[in-house]
Image 1 (cartoon, rainbow, N blue to C red):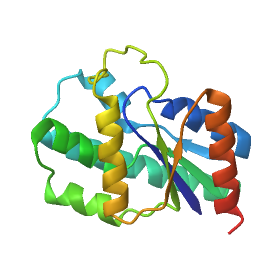
Image 2: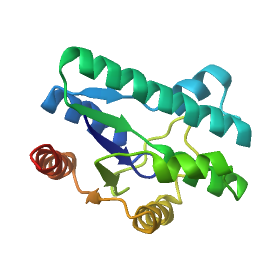
Image 3: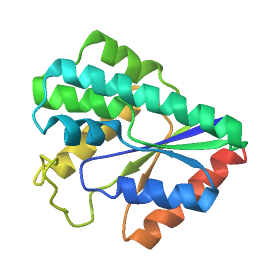
Length: 175
């Protein structure tokens, strides 16, 4: 099973990319659990909520892997990962729970697509950082490097982003 994680700051085209990649490759797309959680429980959250969100994301990935195996699909596209939730925790609360740190270091993905926020901000009641996206992008890149994760930056207009993402996924699938 090949797993690709799509990460980056808010409103940087991650969900659009995940949907398009799933369609392009006939793969299973794992939606961002945090969005469903916050839509159900409201936009306010606590540090323990982030650990519950992480556990929900892990569960959603497990369910997607099971579906993929049943359908004979070899690729899972994940709209976020544990690194994202760890960064979110560190940005909002100044720290991450040890369990969240462990999840961010131990969860395996074959490649990460890091989405540069060079597209216009799209307002959304659950989004928090319209003016801090470039700094947050750098935080993601530093974390991916620190953890030794293989990643590719996707940037530019939608067509360029998708061309890069498709090329990378093709390479990962054919390794």
